[in-house]
Image (cartoon, rainbow, N blue to C red):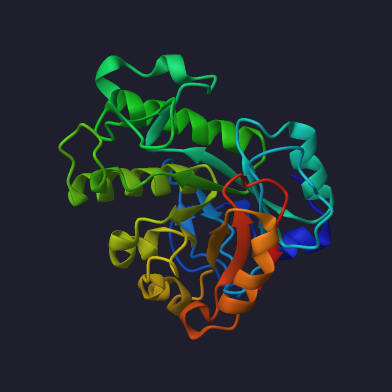
Length: 284
């Protein structure tokens, strides 16, 4: 894939480099993720690993406003048309593609592939969305295909959502070990395809999973007083994308003044958004 110089520098080498085996890459750029050997053993894959302070926009609803001067856009994998992704690339942006890895959303084009045994309880306040049995081989096949779709659409990174099923009333008896195994499966499959992958929320698993994920994304760690749990990502020179919510845009400036510059989010890439996750944003 050909890239403009600005985006090429940001990606720090989302490249497949022919190699005979392991070993250190003497030409690796500072801050890039360590090389990973693919399943075939014939390639080394290096994916985007953003540093703390990376600027971004998170928009999952509405027509994408591509005019922002930010380094990365996080958009919906299913809803984003290819021309939108291509335009963001042409503008030098890294593209993160969102999908839910822990729930079945009835409106998705592949929703019919889930089997009855895969699907559990409905999410509170989210009609049409139900928890998934993350131990299911069928669920994993579907997620592998979603990651393949992300690679085919030339996404640079993925944001798998709802990767904390074990902490919720899912209808399945899931343990932290089940969740760790599933999240590692997602990270490994993403990296095999040359995709960067972020750990979404799942704050109780950060210490175990930080080495296998390239960045973190957290919702409302200030509100829940748990921002310190993301420290391992910052210590590893990886970005911690962070959002605090307001009910109305008119409330945004007050919250911005309250949270920005606070020691709890030092080094974070913080946005103020509404839960609609449309184009509106304020950034620290």
